[in-house]
Length: 123
Image (cartoon, rainbow, N blue to C red; front, side, top):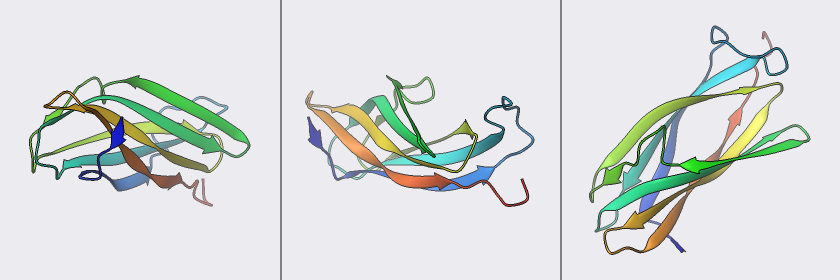
């Protein structure tokens, strides 16, 4: 598996959303907006993801198939945008990777750039 530099991920926005439901031990909900851009010269299908979330001293790894229940297939020049959410108990740092397969069958990955879930001082 190789890193496909022409498959690029952008974190478009991260918003603290205190109106969303959250459990008592993780009372801080965040919505994040992500785009995956295919700047390569062949179609790439995103088939999985791995997120690493560092909350204080705790680290959680979240892996799964697809992206928000989909396996987007991106032609050259296309992008796929979505939003999801995460709840935290404290400030957190998030990063990870998306995994996919090219039209020719090669497994590739692209990194999700690090972003922060910062609990506002008023929360």
